[in-house]
Image (cartoon, rainbow, N blue to C red; front, side, top):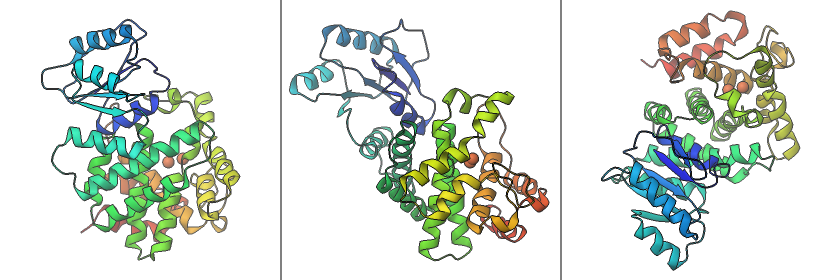
Length: 344
Ligand SMILES: [Fe+2]
Ligand SMILES: [Fe+2]
């Protein structure tokens, strides 16, 4: 996937959205172009085409990067007939407004990439990813979190799990190239399946899934250069990452509309029952069941996550690691979690 842009800062959201379908390279029109591999799945431009210079620059990049048959989606900030004609003249296979809501944009891109109808779980996945993108961007910019988007993400995840499609969900999660999205969608899918397996009523399942969707919201304020750093972090970087529970907690508390369990999960999902976790070193009696569930899903997710720089653990091995953590995790819940990740 390749994104051509004349405003790389503002296109960051788009770039992270595109990573839903795998790695995405960015060509900044304001910088000399480095030679790179031509993508064969999709080219997108997010450029102001009202200037002749910009049109020529895009035409030029398309000539070097577009392979025969590769679809090219042109995003326009002003969908006037003149600019739409311009986009078609440089060979756009689709023209859309750059201001399209995230969900609609993802649906359109999904249609371009997979012309056959999306499966129900794919549709749920797009909906949840779009909502997550809106949520993470609002959080990173210090805006209020979009409650309706979060609810639709929770609903989409629960529906996907209802269809007994945890495996199909995981397959989609693996294709996501962005580590934070991959992690949150993974923890949320696991938590929804966990609550389902425990026979929770609908309201409680929603609560657990919401807590999972939001558990790492504080990471939206941690620089991407640290979050996406491959390999080991320095002590200083680690200290910054370890602030995310408190940041997330304050963010959710400030907004005031989230249930207590959700706010608590953001702050306490790195606590252990034996008091050895952080940030507060809470003990068992101070840690609720919802938090205990999220902690189990969170650790398991981190172990099986797929990154370019590490080999993911197999489910059996990851579960054995959790079991080896002894008094840190809730033994009864962990036993029940086995059926979620190692069915049969
Ligand atoms: Fe976390
Ligand atoms: Fe996490």
